[in-house]
Length: 154
Image (cartoon, rainbow, N blue to C red; front, side, top):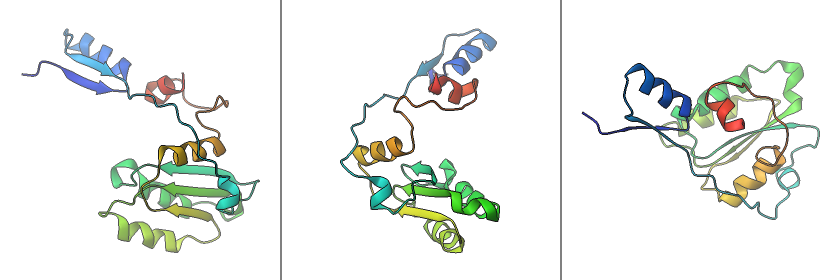
């Protein structure tokens, strides 16, 4: 038996499981929040990202379990008329288990601006990306009101 089962970033699941199993063994843990200070870099200028592009970022270690290849596949499915409206930015080390497939898909993408920074990135760099992508900086967002995403946005 287990003394406790810790559930990361999902308080509602811990409560529900405790209710279902009439226990208090399911414990909610939050990811630590790190206030990020961005680097002194103009991301759009440095990486030649047009001002009118919507910037979509995928950061951290780039792995199968994080949906990295799913994101890449979705780029291939963009309608032709929308391809010129977006820049996809992948920042972080590409996992060795998907590296070959990752770059095969990257090379197959046409007419879409894709930036890959396949290396360890500092928190400051991630903060600069988040700022230009309008996340974590008191900018309104549209998100589901339920589940983990809803809780994190609240």
